[in-house]
Amino acid sequence: MRTKTLKKNKINVFTLGCSKNIYDSEVLMGQLKANRFDVTHESDSEDAQIVIINTCGFIDNAKQESIDTILQFARAKEAGKIEKLIVTGCLSERYKPDLQKEIPNVDEFFGTRDLPRLLKSLGADYKHELIGERLLTTPAHYAYFKISEGCDRPCSFCAIPLMRGKHISIPMEELVKQAKTLAAKGTKELILIAQDLTYYGLDIYKKRNLSELLNRLSDMEGIEWIRLHYAFPAGFPMDILDVMQDKKNICNYLDMPLQHITDSMLKRMRRGTTKKKTIDLVNEIRDKVPGIAIRTTLIAGYPGETEKAFEEMKEWVTETRFDRLGIFNYSHEEDTYAFSLNDDVPKEVKQQRAEEVMAIQQNISFELNQKKVGETYKVLFDRKEGEYFIGRTEFDSPEVDNEVLIEARNNYVRIGDFANVKITSAEEFDLYGELA
Image (cartoon, rainbow, N blue to C red; front, top):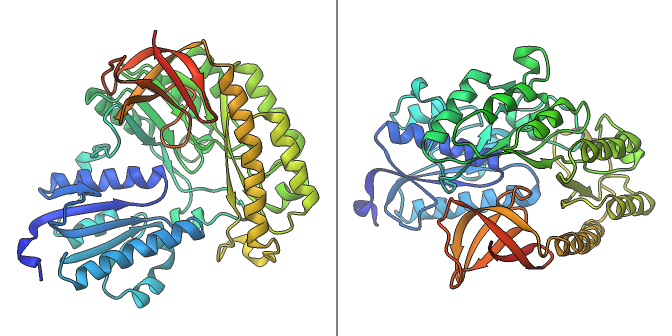
């Protein structure tokens, strides 16, 4: 038994899943610190008395990773390495009764909107005056910036509304206050996140109000980049492109998951759009914001996806030449509309289709990157790794997109600073350069 070596009131928080979960963990940690807890994020030290796991329940692989992590710390508790184990987040919201039954070693389970209850279980108070305060787990110079919670979209394959609830926009004044706090602490890049950015404001302002929010955030002193993630294509508010053109600190970057292109698949997925509307939207965005980098996400092997439908998607990917692209294998999720359909595409076929799409995208990315050789870009440097300083252009988001590498022996930059970099060579997903 090692309980005597554990530090009283020390909490280690582990985060699984997407950037929305990272944000939630940061808010949780800010509240814990204000309640005089010693809190760390994914520390390798084994001296924490309490472990909190913020889980993901999105698709099969993510759920399995969350379950494996819970089991790992359940065994640690049995061995006396920790005293208390708490599970929160999406998996806990969706499967709490099953988890309680299968993993009784967990002390308590909480859902996605149970922060006050979680704090109370630890003898802590939810401090309303700390709204917007959080402990960043990212480097201080960039921060994920959640503008709403939940989703009202009816996508057939998605379990997010089951775990996150209906769409709730965060009031604009509160977001402006949060941005000021971050900027004062040295944050230079805000990465706007939500289940659906384009729905922002409909519930509290009775209109899509993302453009006004962008205008107000872009006027914030110290914020040099604002990046948009997770924009839904149906009902896309074109006025945000005008703001993007007008405000130089809004990155020419848009993350817009499109999922598929054939009319039959889009209808079965309940996406509220068509092939023609999707193609027209991408073309109009590119016309209004020349040089914009568009990232999209697709699904391979949705129920009923024929070989013909898949070939049509491949042709579209080849023709459209997205700057960034990711693809998921379809995951048959309980209680979603699609769960009533026959999951008729074999697992190995889903994987093969995903690999074929990524092979196409790899060639596109290589060709697009070759055109950047000899050009100079403004780069924000995130870290030093081995012999390289590593950063990003305005066309790249952390963790998922291209990186710019410069040799540390010949160049020096401070982490968190911007510098102009001339690109000297390029690979499929990496650019190499030198300070200009």
